[in-house]
Image (tube, rainbow over all chains, first blue to last red; front, top):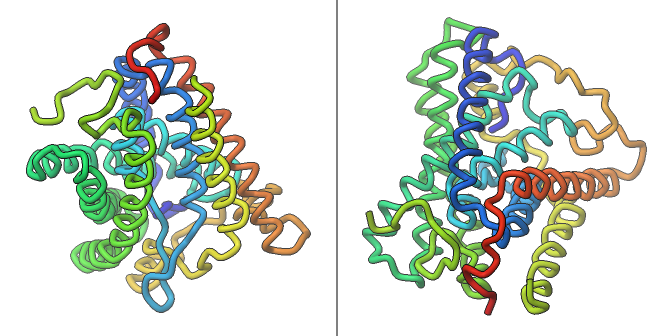
Length: 226
Length: 106
């Protein structure tokens, strides 16, 4: 879902850059409140894992692939604000080192995949986990459902940006909205499956390290049930 | 960090490296969801070439003159190392220090 240069005009791209920088700053200050020494290696590991997993495009439809976004995966493991930083670091590396995602579109991509993906996705997770009864054995399936929902949410972010600043104006925003949401709902199934297996493995081995689990041993900035 | 904890971290990192270096050669090269929609809805041509398209690791190693699987693997390894380094660096800088005792590893 990496937006290249040229699709969204310079005004909206620049505004998104400012907004993304602001969001990154908020994420740093919120992350500080719970990012303890023992969480640092986990957060770095999750960053590397999201990068690696994003390299694996899986087939979705004939002629179309998808890959993990990782927002919910990261936020359930290390919290929503560290999650924003994790996905942002991955996007910055991809844009600067691998020419994946436009440089002028970096702010747009951070908004869609890091801010909507991690913070928006974690908001879905919190509500869903409360509905699921806050039980440890339901962390992975709740994360999977939230991850599935987060992908079309991020896709809608693109549609809003395109409606505001798309460089070609004759197209139907409604048709683009329907196309983006349906294709990304399909990709979201893959997001959910990957998230399920990874969270299951970590919950089994290290339930103390999973921020979104009731067994988390560090501090959390909010109550899961609140 | 206890030794059991260290073993878990090393194992997880090894899995990550394997995904980036070996798994990546089996990745689909079909357009992703956004590219697919762009082609069908008529805005694919708006996309400009990436400013850094000629850099050595652009498109995950496409410019490296080696076997495609190998160059993708090299790109994956470099990416994982940079991600660990940047992640560890940023998170170490902004952490709340001195809370190692708040929960001991099992």
